[in-house]
Image (tube, rainbow, N blue to C red; front, side, top):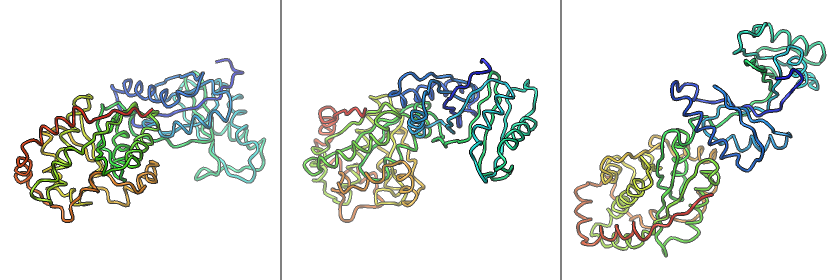
Length: 397
């Protein structure tokens, strides 16, 4: 790098990727792909991918940088994002650049934090911090050094070919890059829980598709539109993940389930058929797991006995319940963080809430559920018909 060159860059530091050893390259490759997807609307960006960071160059102006950072904060796999200056490994340029970030500060404390991966640089981290700090104090008498909890913090990272200097750091979403750990199919209702479950598995590196169940005319177009909007919020209009929403018209099956002899079991039977259809769609779309928003004990269908009776139809197909141990307040807090809460509480009912019996069984037995399903001679044929004829795919971006 020419010693006179100063580049404004967006400096992205990886999160858990630094712990992935031999798989690091694969994770970084997926993260880079996801960053490019999130920033597809920004032309002319240059990407420099390094061992523990990624630099975005050709930013051009501060407003563009702000917009880019706003997109990046939701990308899983990123620990932090900084609007930084990249300069040559020249002490005078480094000192001047750091001073420029502090020159207008008044009546503040500051600290220079130096890290040095380039051990060939002639000054060690402490010596360089003293040099830069002394230069700042010589040119701005309104500042004082404070090591613990300073008002202003300038970070200087000495790399092999440059120095990266910045005074602000925006927290990233952390976690693992979406898609690094495979794909899952999320059973998405219009409620609070399942959107949060989707975001949590995305944070652990899973790409997601969605399946939702409607029962027109009992469920409204508004209820479906609400679910579509939730899927778009979760994926940020497919900028975080290339996802599809599968809409299953469950009315024919629901009408048949309404005739079973034990009303208390109807919600159990309904959910068993939800699972059967979802599993089939997961296999068809190469998803390795299903995801639900179930939380233990929250409603009648979420007891251990009920969960087991419902999930047994999956025949050991993997079912993930990331919210299993969360209470409602914790889930609402996450929904607020993920920006799904306000949409989730819109007053449009889903299939489960509409058809829940007054006194649903809380500890259903699988033998009873099977015998009730066998009361109908056509229910499995109807299930096949629904799967083959009543599922519509909606692209989210």
